[in-house]
Structure formats: C-alpha cells, structure tokens
Length: 336
Picture: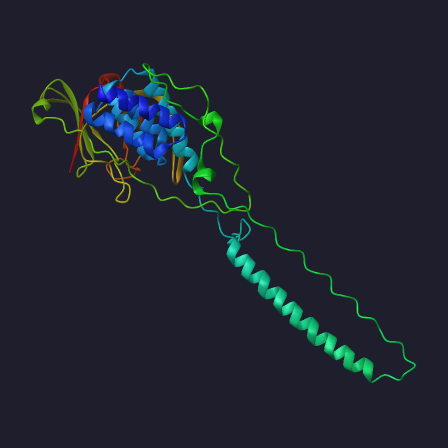
C-alpha cells in the first residue's frame, strides 16, 4: 500500500514539474518493488543523463522483454543520446575560428572603447593647440564628434539543460497502466542561439550495475561466452561449443562491460550514433546491457583486435547466425 501511495505522489510531482520530489517518491517505490515498471520508466524520463535513462530502461526490458512502453522508451532514450552527442571536430582551415566567450568579448570591447577615447582626447588636444596658433582671420575648423561604436550584441545565456533538451518530436512521456499520465507534453526548451558554442560532453557510462547470474546456470541450455583477452566468442549448447567466432570488443577508453548479462531486445537493423561515430542500419543487433550489444559489422574486418566503443563486433554472416540461434533471455558471459 505504501508503494502505491508513493507512486501516486511521484506521478503528481512529476506532472507538476517537481522533479526532485518525484524522483524521491519513485525511488521509495523501488525499495519495496525493485522491478516496478512505472517507477523505472518515470525515473528514466526524469533523469537528465541520457545514458542513465538507458540504464533504467534496460532494467525494465530485462524484467519485461515484451513491454511496448519499454520499447517506446528505448527508442526515445536512444534519440536523446544522439541529440546530446558532441559534433565531430572541424578540420583546421575549414571553418571560422571559435567564438570568444561573452565575458571575454565584453572585456575586449571595454578596452577598445577606452583606447579609442584616449586617442580622441590626444587628437583633440593637438587640434586645439594648432587652432590657437592660427592667425585671427583664419576660420576655426569644427571637430566632428566621433561616431560612437555600436554596442556589441548581447549574448543570450541559456542553461545547458535548455540547450540539450529534446524537442517535442523526440520526447517520450511514460504512460503507466494504473496511473495514466496527462497527455500534456513537457515544455519545449528555448532554441539555442547560434552564437553560443555548444559544450563538449564527456561520455558517461551507465550507472547501474549488471545483475549477477548464478554460476549454476552456466552450461545449461544455450549461452554465449565472450573472452576479451582472446577476442573470441563461443556459442554453447549446454557445455558443448557449437560456434567459435573471432570478434572485436571495446577499446581501452571505451571498454566492453564485464559480467553476466541476458539479451533483452533484438533488432534486425538499428542505427547507432554516439561520440565520434554515426552508423546507420547496423545488422543483427542484440542488446544485452543498457546500450551495449552484439551486432554485425560492415565498416571494418579487423576481427581478433579491440575496435569498438564497447559493443561486441562480429562479421555480419556470423552475427546473422547468432541472431537466429540466440533468443531474448540468452545468457551472455563476458570476462578476461
């Protein structure tokens, strides 16, 4: 009963825009019911970190693989990751130099105005001295007032959350079954001014830890073993290996997570976008933890060596075989 009351309180607070209160209420629900779908999806929606949102949704899909709300949330969260990914660096000489910060521009402007005023004063003093020395019949030359320099444009300082908030077309609002939320969309963020240099985001790994799988399940049914040291994937039927494939896993700065996981969703094709890469129509994708997956590869053939941003890259024909062989819920054991 307490969990239901906290859930109602969290939904009311979220709809009213009281994010901290809503998050506290939903976390209280999870202390009593750790797999409460509604609370997890609301926390995914309220979290400012796009990858943390993916971690909440992954927990829902692990518990409810066929949930249509969780699949809709996954599509929404993956669009958020694309929106917040930093733009690739521009080659030298191909673009204008970066804009100076607003504070620096103001300081430069004040210094320039001060120097201009000092120069005008010196010039005025010299001209007055020259005019005094002329004969009385000479006409004094009037000094035209210097035209004031136009003031610099006032930059519009927006908070980071406003610059990176998704538009209404990419917004997902959880719709819990017992307590359907209002169809009102969250307010659309103010457009980012073009004069503001977008910040460079540091990729943040998902904060949730994988749920350990009892070792007794190893060797039972179909399961997948990935050896990061040897860069080899082995598909097992019980304790018998049925397929061995050379793979490419994560690079040192973007490692593949270690542990026991289960495949929670499969796509024949999926788009993958993140810091430094944009890969459309990646074939035979099987997600096993947050945004990490097993999938086919068409952009390299250097298997047997780490090459990825954390996923397990397979040759596309092998990925197709594995996709048809493994189902949702299949154990994936990753180790060194």
